[in-house]
Amino acid sequence: MDSSTILQLPQLFSILPKPQRVSRAYPFKPWKKRTSQPTRFQCQKMYVPGFGEASPEAKASNNLHNFFTYIAVSIVTAQLQSYNPEAYEELMEFLGRHSLNDGDKFCADLMRESSRHKTLALRILEVRSAYCKNDFEWDNLKRLSFKMVDESNTRLMRDYVLETSHEEREK
Amino acid sequence: MDSSTILQLPQLFSILPKPQRVSRAYPFKPWKKRTSQPTRFQCQKMYVPGFGEASPEAKASNNLHNFFTYIAVSIVTAQLQSYNPEAYEELMEFLGRHSLNDGDKFCADLMRESSRHKTLALRILEVRSAYCKNDFEWDNLKRLSFKMVDESNTRLMRDYVLETSHEEREK
Image 1 (spheres, each protein chain N blue to C red):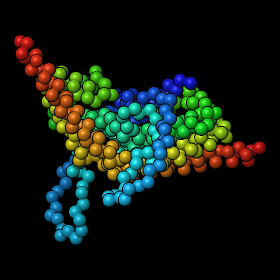
Image 2: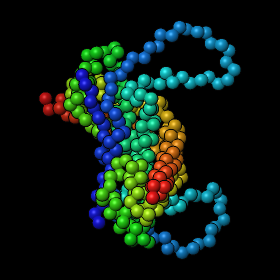
Image 3: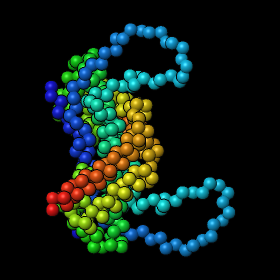
């Protein structure tokens, strides 16, 4: 079976909104003598508009949640293929009919398909929890993201300079 | 201007592939006396098929990279709106014509639009680096993801039990 299940995460970002101004005109108050560690104020951070009550971290974790479901389905599929071809075929058939865009909806639908599918669904739930908590390398994610933003910024600026200096030389 | 810039991240997941079997039939070798901490073997983790040379962490960080570009554009837009309406209008007009799906391509195009747009692009690059490294709460992301997987699994199982017990009562 051709398992052409392409994932897209359509609900990660909402509409880019018009930002609201944040008033910072509070009067200066001298500090009282600190008795504990200084509190870090949220307002020291850049103002990110458009997330309402949710935070960027919550949006990103929601996205990762669907990613972990996708990974768990991949893991379970690979395991089944080697020792339970019947269940493997059933799961692949179900995957052909249902989108993995919304991981939770996929699992809810899988549970209700049949009692055999329910067993598979429970296993997927278990695997995605174990993957998220034990196998996924969170420190590596952070490290790779730092590296990617540095490398991308350098590459973009270098490409631009190369391109424009090339144009100037042609003049 | 109606800023209906909806982000989708189409390249996060590739096609769910047919997994390959991993051979683990290597002969047993007795351990030599350890002189340092025991190494943690990658094969203790669950086998995740379909990522080739890239890792799930690399895919996720690529996704977050585009998310950070989106956030940086939001931050810069909000800042411009309050003190530079002209640049704000220019950026919004550019946003209406260009997709933010691929953050790096967006920045590359913005750089090449005009010299004023280039200044905005450089600022977006700077902001996304600062946001990624200083403002984004990585520990919070991990905490929220753990919480989300637990809560989702509980909810899915509870809903299923409630639904099926309800059906049985009706019989």
